Length: 208
Ligand code: ZN
Image: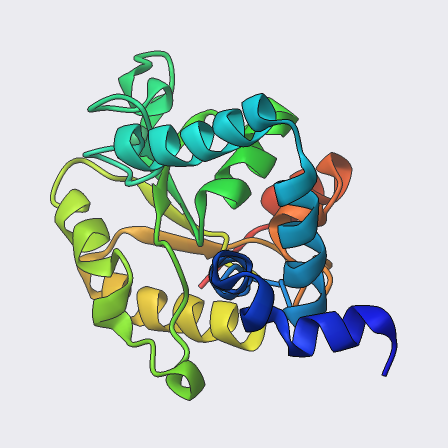
């Protein structure tokens, strides 16, 4: 056991505040014990002003960001700028898993339709069912004049399960349902894929 570990194992003796901070940081996605410890010690050594800015940014984001009432993306407004834009084609809806995926498609500046953000994907293994994502909300939107639903969930098992579920749900309505072309790396988050690949996947979409 080195000194740092010895310190950490006795951490409560020194500061329960640091333990608490580590505990909270560890709840974040992708943050393990080691990273949480590193971040916690870094934070307590930061200038007070910087720590205040960080804490305020977290609280302000949480308090002011809400779901767009149409597409459910995260936004500061009632209706997000994309849904509010009359130049967009409101008859084509692209279904994505999260706001980051929406941002990835927006970066291509080629997609002219609107979006629907599910905030997750169906995962029987993780106990996430259709009722846990914004699916009902999607079905409600389809009562308006919709020509096509493009399913752009990830090519992971969860993404494919979700795509299949949605297509089965929509098919009977007669609305055209398409799925972005594969070629998007399996399990790859859409946000990490370059714009050319995204456009190719969109252009090569197939009807389900
Ligand atoms: Zn919106």
